[in-house]
Length: 293
Image 1: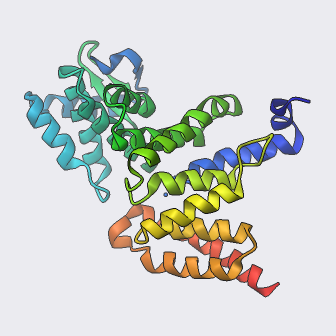
Image 2: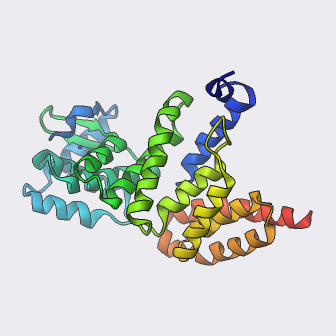
Image 3: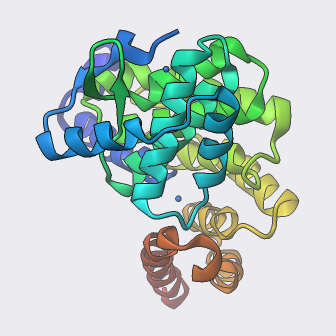
């Protein structure tokens, strides 16, 4: 039986599906119209057109608008305008890597929050749904050694992976991991070790060969590095605790959980903090159970 057969049958298929979901969890557009699909919601279409009409005309003003509206505690409506402004900027300056980076970043925030990712296609005079990965890919095509652009692409790939079928995931996963490796080589400090912890979590959660690329040793190496080099981010310690549990080191995992808990500040991480807190509580329960054995 081939590796792919094992992956898609019985326990191998179940493990692969679980891994796809956990891989997504590892993540705490010349004219864009070339890859847009029509937006189905009429109310969203009308609101997007209204906001489009209010956009400034100068590229410099659009860029400033897209930058200033992006912040982690933004309201979804603010982030929707940031995406709209950056899409319009990419229409006016199709060779601008910055335009696509800003669009991909805002798009990913909205996707992760659960909001529609729409822009207005002026050439076809309609509101359209955008693909966050394709926006980020265009930024990378124009700026292939920009660590921030690559990291934005990786985050958007992770979001797509979370909602992928097995067939789709098999196409995405290798480029996803390769992109994270590129970020680490260029600048591992982006997002306080973001690529280190996401790739480490993938190696931890993935089933081992031949079903997947799972490797506990690689996971521990990456997550220990993330926690050591960027000790202020709670997920670096939380993910390390999960790896330490798998490595049958519950005492070390308890220490990592305590550090993660002390760093998980809602005033800094906003709506993501609640999501991360739920994960932290699950890991805490696993640590207590392991220590009681």
